[in-house]
Image (cartoon, rainbow, N blue to C red; front, top):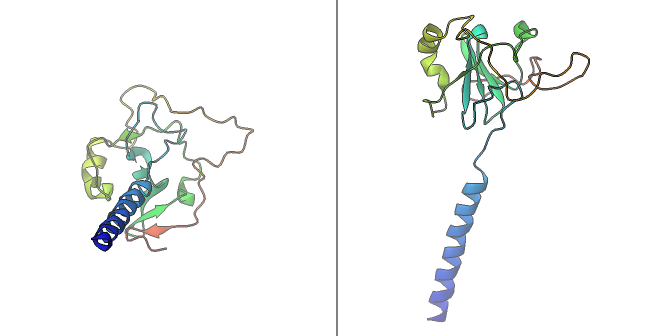
Length: 151
């Protein structure tokens, strides 16, 4: 009887450990300073001016390059001068999957380049001074991955 109790107790500890591990591995993203002020809990932004997405959980941009959707911590060199603070960000509140670009045609049609709802969008953080160096929204072009996660 004692062996059965130990076996059951050990099994419960393994199950509990698995549950705790699963809870710890859940990613919670941090809203970038250039993100919309009211974006709490949103995973994806659509950036109409550059027809790209930002994944808050992963801290990556998702954009079309060479006919494939790429994931990268940085925007491609073509957008090196894009103003993330000034550009409008559409919060995708109604999407909870892993591939927001599956709805790209709809997003592009609903939110064309230049879309801004007629007012300036407040950002979560403050725009850094021009003299300061900040890595937020670094616009380099290293670390690209395609939509399957391959570099």
